[in-house]
Image (cartoon, rainbow, N blue to C red; front, top):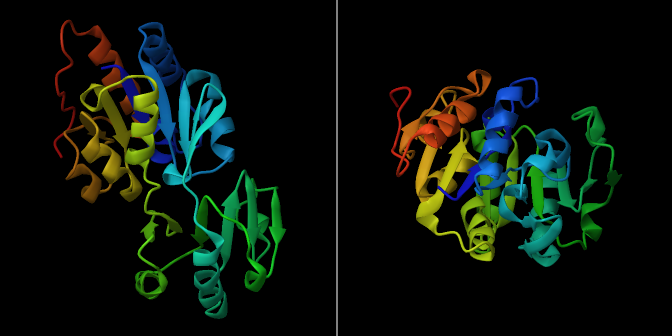
Length: 262
């Protein structure tokens, strides 16, 4: 194990959005052992404050649109505004609450801080004039019927994923957690089979499938568990820290350890 990659919400973070002391200590153990630590999240700029940045050598934002290593952007895969504009217009006409994210700013068609109080950097804009290559497009409170409609709008270069809290997220097909973590791995000369990944939600599936070891949290959705090599305890029980500490305590190669049945 030469790199661990963790999702944030429902994985690294407890339900109150804090990182426990046990988890912080486990991450420091990894760093002391020369293991690269990375978080990969659907969040944008807010992630750095939540995750305690000094505990990580790199991070992946907006589901793979941006990768940062040692404090510098090393990879980007944006949604071209020419492709985004017709999608945004059609969704706006249907009454959806929308935003496009770039560098921590939300360009939105509604007062987004009334929905998410922690978002302070936003501009209310006209979708007809959208001219920004975005890391991610967001559609709030999306239903399965809404998602089916949005799918009909997307050109082949874009894809939609929906989180468990019904946030629709549209990214470039080149922007996935696994593909962008692979960029960091190449930068640090880490092999795919030397990477352990942790996650709980649908946007973590591609990463768990790709990593050498994919670990689903105890609170993970059933669909996520199905693609993981093993299952640890929940985020409220510091499942990541439990798995990492046991792996570091073992001699020789890291073995697949199942703490709960899938």
